[in-house]
Length: 73
Image 1 (cartoon, one colour):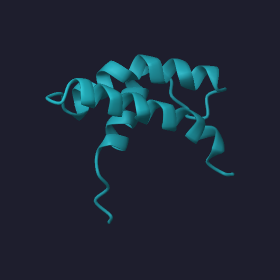
Image 2 (cartoon, rainbow, N blue to C red):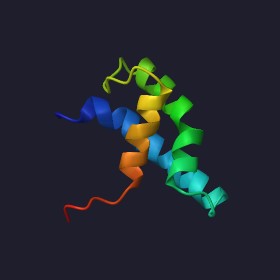
Image 3 (tube, rainbow, N blue to C red):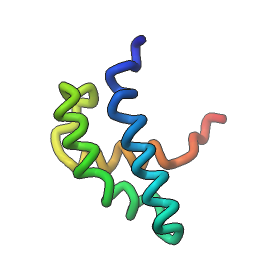
């Protein structure tokens, strides 16, 4: 339950990223994040801002982070 609000934004955003990657296999993380960030920012605003993003740049940085495999594994 703790991540329910953020997942409501993160899951559809990641789905959009995957779809974009399939349509444009040569695009890297940065290009995908840049393309999806405006939508992600809007989704976050509509969901009551579970992520404290102030701008599309914040959304872009977050998405880039999500698309980068974790180094901790």
